[in-house]
Amino acid sequence: MKKKVVILGGGPNRIGQGIEFDYCCCHASYALKEEGIESIMVNCNPETVSTDYDTSDRLYFEPITIEDVMSILELEKPEGVIVQFGGQTPLNLAVSLRKLGVNILGTSADSIDIAEDRRRFKEMLHKLNLLQPDNGTAFNFKEAEKVARKIGYPVLVRPSYVLGGRAMEIVYDEATLEKFIVEAARVSGEHPVLIDKFLEDAIEVDVDLIGDGESFVIGGIMEHIEEAGIHSGDSAMALPTFTLSGTVLNKIRQATYEMAKELNVIGLMNVQYAVKDDKVYVLEVNPRASRTVPFVSKAIGVPLAKLATKVMIGKKLKSLGFNKEVIPGYVSVKESVFPFNRFPGVDVILGPEMKSTGEVMGIDSDFGRAYIKSQLAAGQNLPVRGKVFISVRDRDKRSIVFIAKKLDDLGFKIFATSGTASALKKNGISVKVLSKIAEGSPNVLDLMKDGKIQLVINTPSGRIPRQDEVKIRSHVITYNVPYTTTIAGAQASINGIEALLKKGLEVKPLQEYHKKLKGKSKKVKNKQGE
Image 1 (cartoon, one colour):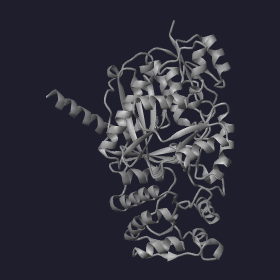
Image 2 (cartoon, helix red, strand yellow):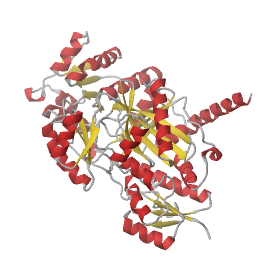
Image 3 (tube, rainbow, N blue to C red):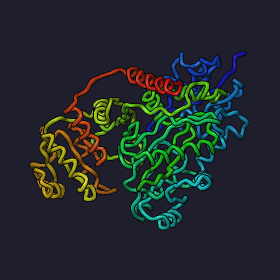
Image 4 (cartoon, rainbow, N blue to C red):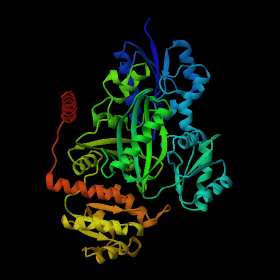
C-alpha cells in the first residue's frame, strides 16, 4: 500500500494569506508524486490551484480547524502532516496536532512554538547573542503604557499569532497607544499584545532558508525598497540586495544559519531583519514557507517548496543538489499589487497592516530596469516626460532635493506645495508653486483631473494625515496617476525612469536567466575540478 501524506492548505484567501502559499502547497503535492507518495490536500478555497481535481491524489474540501483536520487524519491514517506551506492558518494548529499524537513532518511543533512564543523566542536570541529591538508584552492599556515608557516611543503594537499584520500599528504617543491597544488586544484574544521599539529609517531585509536538520542553505536575501514599518507583504524588494555592505550581509547570513541550527529547521524558514547603523536586528522568524518563496524560487531557478517537501520526507539537500546559496548576476524585483481602484476615496498610504492582494516580478540585468518592469506589471506606468507634483513632510525635505534635481535633469517640470517648493528653490531647482486645495484653483486636483500631472510624490505628514494629503492620494487612483508615498520608492522610481530613457527595455524569458546561472555554476565546478 502507498504511503500517504496530508498537506494542510491556507484556507480562504484573504489579505495576508495569499496565493503564494497555495503555490507552495501545490509544489508539495507535485514533489510527493515524484517520490511515489499519495498526496492528500486539505483546503477550502475554490479559487486555488491546490483544490483543482488533478493537483493531488485526494482532496478534502474542508475548513482548516483542529476538529475537521483530526476527522480526516483518523480516516486516512497518513505517515505525517505538512503544516508549513499554508501560511499562519495551519501553523497555528501545529501544537494542538502534536498534543493529539499527530506526526508533523519537517520542523518540530516545539521549534514552531519557540518562534511564535515571545518569551521563548527572546531566550533563543539571547542564547545566540543576537540583537532584537527592545520589546515587551501586555494584555491591556496600563501594561502597554508601562512597556512603551520603558522602551521609548515610537513603538510597534501587534497582536500575537495573526496574519498580514492585522491590527498592527506604529504608535508615537500615549493617546494613540490607548486607541490601538484595545483593537490589538481584541484580535490577540488569550495571547498577549506584542510591543516592540520601532526602528525609524531602518532597512528591512527578508531571508528565505531551507534546511534538512543537518545542513542549511539560504535561498535568497531580499532588501526591501521601502523602509522598515511597511508590511513585508506590501513592500517592493530586490534580490540580490542593492545597498547592503558585505559585512552586513555576512552578519545576516551568520545569524540566519545559527537560528536555523538552533530550531533544527527541516523544510523552510523565513527571517525578517532590520538594519540600522550597520547593526542587524532580528524582527521575527517564521519556521514555514513565506510569501516570498515563489519569488525567490523564480529568481534563483530552484523550486524551494518542492525541495523542502523532499527534505521533510527524509531526503538530504546534498543529494538533491542544492548545497550553496545562489547569488544571481541579474536583478529581480518583487512588487505588490493593491486593490485601491476598487475602493474609491481610500487613502493609499502603506503601513504595518498588509493591504496588497497580489504581487508581480520584474527581472533584468540592472536594478533600474528590473524595477520599472515590476512597476509596469503592477499597473504603474511611470512617465518618461511631463509634470511631477511633489509634497513631502519636513523630515523628507533634504532627501527630496536630490530626487527633484534628477527629475529636473531628466527634463520633467516640477510642481510643489509652498513648503516643499521653498526647500527646492533654495537648492536651485526650478519649481512652480501650487495653491493648497482649500485655497482654491489651480491646485493639484485640478491639474490631475485635466491630465496635466504625470507623477505624484507625496509622503505622509504623520499618523493622522492632513485632509489635503488624503484627497491627493485618493485622487491619484481616481485619475490613474502613478504615485509613490515613500522617499525610497521615489528614488527607485527615478532610477527606473532614467534606465528606461537611457537604455530602453528588452524582454527575455525566465529560462534565459536561469541558463546563465547554470552556466555560472558549471564554470565554478570546472575551476574547482582543475
